[in-house]
Image (cartoon, rainbow, N blue to C red; front, side):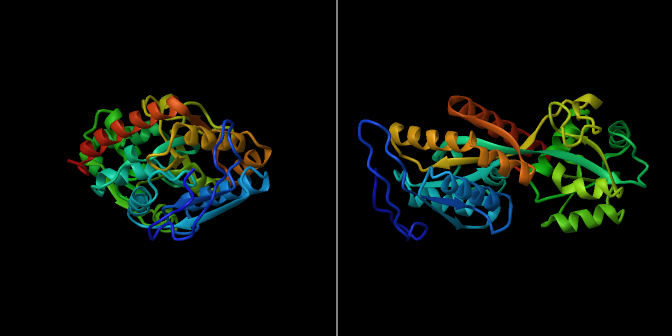
Length: 321
């Protein structure tokens, strides 16, 4: 294994036990969270850090935050500084797929070594309880009547919320370029606009709306999962309502470019042990994250499929060439 790291991103050296005939124990890892502290990627990185250390799968794990541009700044530093280094990982996800395209990033996910998809959150469409829209069928009717009169509040332009709104609109036969999408930098601002009746509908992860729905302030019209979710058994899926869209805001862990197959296998085995641990299961329950673990060739194939589908819908929306 490589023992010396270079570059501004990897200023602190990390050392791993050399590989012999059998897989050696990983002593140290650095996990890059390409976002500011507190967000989903940061929480994912720190959850991984906690479980790896508490279960003694890795002795020392550090988290480094490199925020900006939907994760593409951190991704670029990771790709450029860590080639061939098996002691550094990066957290990413579906938002990064869109950000790479919309920001015309000079680096992309083909330049990292995917290890596994770990968690996912499904998208939900919600309205204030006093909204005239009582179901997804009502929303579909409104969109078909005049999509420009239906305003959507969600996260950053080109992110999972925006992509889902575009896919939803396209699935019902309406031009996704007509989506009247209003991007908000924070969930609090978006929620305030929905509750205040300043937009027609809100679109975000289900967990963002859970508290307000239970308080009777929001009505969740539907979720983007394949089947109804245990945490929201009364909420129909998009597909149940005749809208053929299934999507999740997933999060992944990837290794550096240029590592050996043996190093990738060792990291993969470590992450698999983490995912199967009681501590990880408890962490997912605490955070409200779904376990969508997928690794190996199956994840490589799914990632490629998601990238292709995202390129298509972002072009449809008008956010990509």
